[in-house]
Image (cartoon, helix red, strand yellow):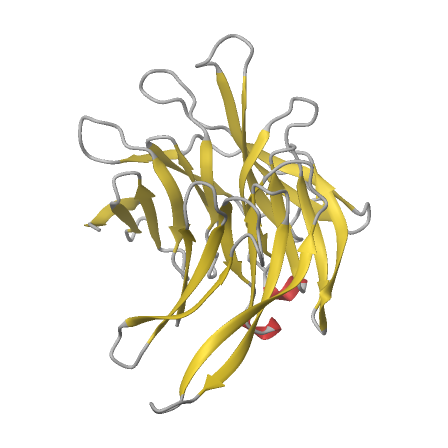
Amino acid sequence: MTFLQTMCEGVARAQTIRVFDKDDESQWKLVSQFGGSEAGHKSAIWQVEWAHPEFGQVLATCSDDRTVIIWREREVVTSGHAPAHLKLKFEMVATLQDFQKGVTSIGFAPAHLGLQIASACNDGKVRVHQGNSTNLTVWELASELEPDAGFGAYITCLSWNRNRVDVPMMAVGWWRQQSGGAEQRVSGVGVWGYSSDQKRWSLVTKLDVEADTRGLVAEVRDVDWAPCMGRPEHRIAAAVGAAVQVWSLRPLASWPAERCEQPARPTVLTMDGSVPLTFWKAGWNLTGTTLAASAENGQVRMWKLDFQGQLKPHCVLEQ
């Protein structure tokens, strides 16, 4: 089991990536540290993502420097007076540069769609690059979509639909400032599908974001599409301000032949306490039955589906 972490080296320096591995005693050990302004991104790293293992030990990073970098693991055995031990080395194999502003979120497609990566950019577009599994230096811009066309929205997050039955789909979160004032904000989550006949992405359905108790709409900071695991509906969770909002969608296999109806209002999950805390990340487990979300105070709140399909508070993890 391997764990990734980005580490800030100071205000004026770029970030680096740390890789940890769990040993036989269940202890996390630092096995690799790489990146930095001399061999990597020139600005802050926003996200790190692993590709599916069938493509090897490949990961990607995105940054405010308007690039996505593809890294490949190389095993290096070093020896000395102490017994030989294994260390991991990652080399930069490709840099994707088709972006006008900072890249805030990335996500590799599920393995059955091949080696593809989607990138959310602050220029208002999501771009999908197609990789070559036998030559990781080759990446081509395959398609793109613009969730809030013409309004200059910030694209903050995305998540692929992992269901093999559906056409390629992803959920995309965005927000933009209205001209009416500092607190006038519009945000949303759109479900987009790729039509192989038309060779383009189209909106499948829109997920309306609920306002908070003050009547304000917060930014969508993260989104995650739950694995279906044989259930008759899809669930998509998004971290929106001081709440996690969860939508349930009916089966989508009929799209694009049949239009998908807009889902009902989301289930809104919040933290206990009088002071609202912003959620930054939300994610489902491998079976799509447990939802976890991390808040700005370092806590991780977890909810679990009961036998009626309702999300109930499960536990709180303290840092």
